[in-house]
Image 1 (tube, rainbow, N blue to C red):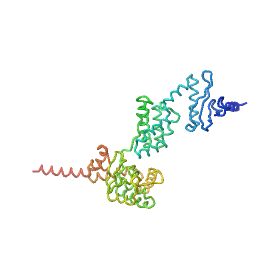
Image 2: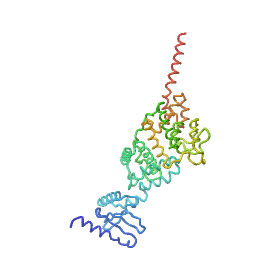
Image 3: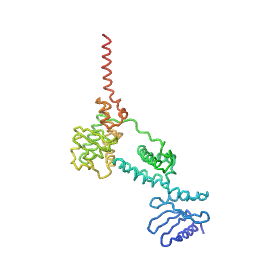
Image 4: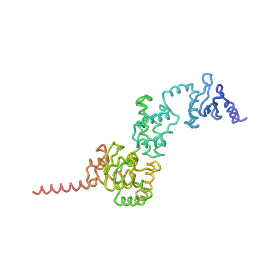
Length: 386
């Protein structure tokens, strides 16, 4: 008889109802990984278990809920437990530890419940996307104190390749803050945050500004789509005309539209006022006014997804493929600088909290500086001839 059939017979024997559980629950054991099984409770809930002999007695160790763990992850955990048992360790010690040290998945849920109510609505919206796409399954099956610095570095590098450097950096900041709370709440010892010290991906240093010809092509492309996609066209137009951040326009409510100004309550740097030029006001006047709490621009899908998809199509059509949506903000600032506006004024227009943030645009006023230097030089030369 082959070893395969021996294992199959063994599995069938082990699959019998566990003593003491008749009528309540049963366990189906795997015939490839001895002792590993799936426990089916009377309620229908399923969990993964491992049956091994420890200290001369049969013990059944619960690995985790089958609704949370995949079979592959559960088997990986089971193999590690088998190794510990063979080395003379008692997995019950880890189980005891687990009562006070949460798993990554459970702590992520707990952190969200506590922290999310303190975030701005726009932050909640963005963070929820990152949680679903990048965070929920990042360290499945691990306790938070099992995640080391090397794990964090590998995770960040992998995410950088799959989702892009910017997304990886944003996800990194979320987990860094989450594990800082794990320290503050006593789940982890001080200075043990594995995400502290992980190097962020370098951002793009050069701001992209549009030429007059590029702005003309962008304007023509927007005009062609105004009837079919009024919301998308209006959002991009306002970003170009006001220098606002994407979230400030996407989350704009009618209560914040007050005559010739936007009185933003959910800005990155806190409440601020954005003054509207005639063209920007005309964009808003093209929409029927609704209740104060309602958003000005409503989409059938996530607003961020809608506007990003539209922008990718639009920039190809306008021949500005290397321009990011955020570059419209930089372009607005560059036009202000070239109009000889002062740095404090540009900072006020953009809603900057610190002057050093605005300093990146100082070189754009070179023309007016050159003119001033010529005038000063001529005056000095005239005085010297006297």
